[in-house]
Each structure stands twice: as structure tokens, then as C-alpha cells.
Amino acid sequence: MNELKLTDKQFDLFRDFVYRESGICFNVINKIILESRIASSMKERNLDKVEDYYKLVSTNKEELKTFLDNITTNLTKFFRNEPNFKLLKNYVLPRILKTKKLGEQIRIWSAGCSTGEEPYSIAITCLETPGIREQDIKIFASDLSLNSLVAAKEGRYDAHKVENVPEDYLKKYFDKLPSGEYAIKSNIKKLITFDYHNLRHRGSQTNMDVIFCRNVLIYFDTESVKLTVNRFYDILNEHGYLFIGHSESLFGLDTKFKFNNIDNSIVYTKN
Image (cartoon, rainbow, N blue to C red):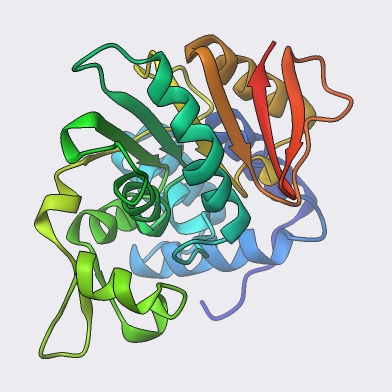
């Protein structure tokens, strides 16, 4: 099966199913992406009928995870949108540090962590912030893609993947392998807990100081964005901060978050 064209009925079936399970919205514009992912999955399973594949993913939890993994786009890089990390280091972390009691950790969640570049960038930024030690931080990272999580836990990246990493950071936080790849040092990996999580559903995260959820909400419809963002609000501590993608906005949504533009970087805080 080299090419698949979903009928309107089939497309509506999968579109509604994907939305219910993940909050991701497909439309006529990105329909071709959905068709391509379904076609490749059907070929791998020697299935000829779209209805048979739908029955499989809708009744088998492991097949569902694999399906959602396949339709998730994972494009990321280290220190993506650099002003966010400058704001984290120079403004957010110093203020959070002042609210912490002796021995109390700073808790950060990278929601939609893809292959790990974001949480590792967060960890490095924390350790480059004066007054913060390894034992002072705990980072949680989650994604809908199991394949991405496997890559993130491994923490090995081709040379072009680390092009945005400053040379001194490369020497300090990465090991260069004989293959030419760069591997995150083990002491950095220990700071991060990777786990599967579907933002469509309520998770176990609590008492967060900072949440990064960048370039994820853009795939949600308004109702799903509102639901997700309100959950973020509830699990953030009193002095919590929320970073979203530069092309995303909470403008017009009924949320309690306060918009802040600090040093040319946008961050949301609890009122």
C-alpha cells in the first residue's frame, strides 16, 4: 500500500478518535499526514482495510500508543527559543530560589519533551544559575511518543543536533563519542525523570515551580488548550511559571494566568 486516500467517513472516524485520545486536531489541510501514518502502519501489519486498522488501534492499548507515537511530529533542538532560557536563568530561577526552604528542591516539568533536548537544556540552565546545585533541582519530562522517550533517555545526539550548544557547555555537559555523536553526561541524566504522559489525561505531577509546554498546544483545539492550561495552573506552586511556544498564546482564553513580557520573552504566572 503505497498511497492511501481516506474517505470522508474514514477520515472523520480517525480524526474524532485521535482527538478523543490525545487532543490533537487533524483537518483537511493536514489530512495527508494522517493518511501517510495510517498507510505505513497498515503495511507493517499486513492489513488491507482501513476499518480493520481502526478496530485494532481502538481496542488494543499498545497499538494505540504506537499509533499516537507515529502521528506525533517531533522537531526540536537544544536551547530552542534562547530568550526563554535566558529568562529562566536570570529571572525565574533566582526568584524561585528565594522561596525555597533549605533542602527543598526546584521542580520543573517539560511537558512534550520529544527526544530530550528541552529537559537537558533546562538542566544545564539550572546548573549554570548561581546558587543552584544538582541536588537542588528535579526535572520531570514527558511525551506522547514512546520512541522519542527512548531516545531522550539514551541522551545521544548527532553533531548537527548540538549545533546551538555553546562550546563550553559541550565540554562541560557532554561526552564526545568515537562515532562523532555527543552523549549527555550521566550526572545530568540523573536529574531528569522521563515518563509517558498524554496531556489529554490528568497526570500525577504536583507542586511544580516551572512548566515548559512549548509547541504542543498549537496542535490542540481551544477547548483542549483551556483544559490543559487550567490543569497546569492547578499543579503550579504559588510562585509558578508557565512557558509556552512563541507561536502560541493564551489570549482570549478563560484562564487565571497572568501574561508577562520580560526581556523580550513571554512567560505566564499565577495571579
